[in-house]
Image (cartoon, rainbow, N blue to C red; front, side, top):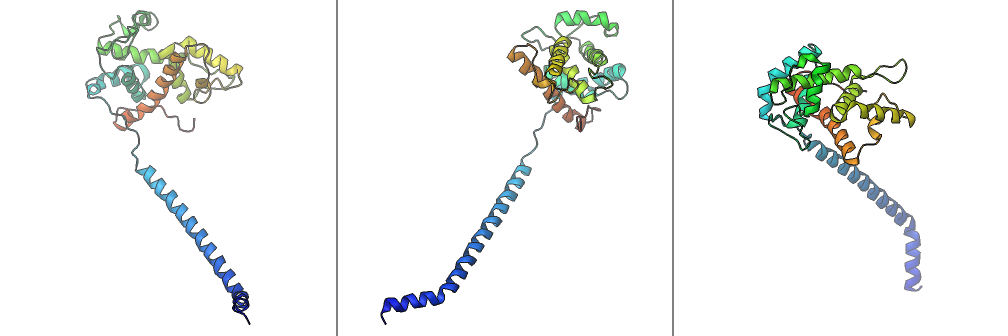
Amino acid sequence: MSGAVIMRCRIKERLPEIVEAFAVGLAFSAGCAVVGAVFLALFAALAHAAVPEKTVTIPRAALQYRATLIREARAAWGLNAPVSVFAAQIHTESWWKNETVSAANAQGLAQFIPSTARWLPTVAPEVGKPQPFNPAWSLRACVVYDKYLWDRMSAMSTGKSLVPCDRMAFVLSAYNGGAGWVNRDRNLAAKRGLDPDRYFGSVETVNAGRRASAIRENRRYVSRIMEYQHAYIRAGWGPGVSCDGA
């Protein structure tokens, strides 16, 4: 019998062993791949968890105005005033620098433009004579104006009330860009089948006619304050406004 024939016979005899070994090898390789994938996923999760959450640093200048803001906020809103929202608002407006003047001539800690500063006492006499560069006046005017806007924000849907998260978002949007624009945005949202009583994911997605740069700035203003408030809550400034489950 030739060597080639003998070799074929031996291969045929051992074919079941070869197939079994091949199958075992495939299973082992697949197992290794699964284990490797799990390990990589776990490593990625741990690496992600190790990345610190974005932190907001409260300027040192804020500390000298803390007591004044708390006092003015409670006077206008009551003992449960969302002080941390107002603190985040001043943080966003001026970085707690009282001498700040914007390109639009907005002035002081709360960045009131002169026309708004003159108008506010006509609807809220308790703020007193306009003094945008007086920190006490500026902080009082900020929280009183926010309360004025809060009281005028109501649900557009019959039998419904605005939840605090959306209501405060509308207030901040109005403070930054005007209540008229907020109302137009809400009306447009309703026409498009969106919920006019929800800011996040609804009204914030529409633009009733503002310049692209203005609408971007307005939306960033709201989201930044709602994010920054958590730094002040953690620092013990007082309550904020929760959007959990809103």
